[in-house]
Image 1: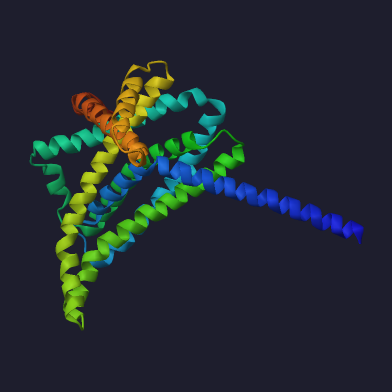
Image 2: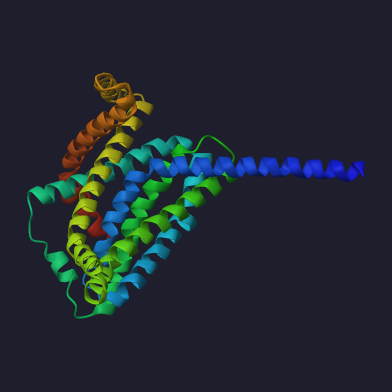
Length: 323
């Protein structure tokens, strides 16, 4: 009997350790996911454009195909690559994060530039040609998964950097949870956003009560505004997150001047606020100056990317296809 009690006691102890490990993983996953929130917002804001121009019955299947591609990007390709880097070449993580942050700055700044100086985009116009919907769908899905790969790489790298130093399996499980949950949140939100106007049309046409029909009309009229807000928030998030990554990376690599200046400005500004708002004030001021830096860096990178990197990439791709 005493042996059985001892065994039960051991089982209970193991269960407590397992429960603690689950709590630790959940906590680390939540922290890592929060760090990647800016990229997630942009991912959710960018994706709906890939179903523009298709029949309503193709919207959810297209989103599902993109979501599956996103999971493959995160769990099959990026997760093992991130773990290999973290365990065998951790010194590469900060430079790679900075490259990804610079890319986010470029993307955000390009959106701001195009908003201020709009121009006709023949490529987009050609892309919307409805003559071959099946071919167009394949191109859209492939383009979305390619864009997702870049954003997912940033999400996974940011998440890995946010996980406290721990065992290989702890990091692997945490990253898998973060990657899966973020994919579900992003593409679940996209599906709801994309179908919101259809739901509004149905309510407006078939609602039994006037308030229901009014709500339906409100959804239809409000969706363009919601998309505009999402786009603006996504752009701001890209600039803030990208700028923060580069500034923090410079500090880690031994160039702390800019990081220190932003930190001092945030502290000075927060002290002028009521004590209850100090934490929020510090974050907001830091995010503002990180975003300003991100915008400036992105504007500098626009000619580098459009005149140098993109033509070179296009030429290399064309040679590979010809060969």
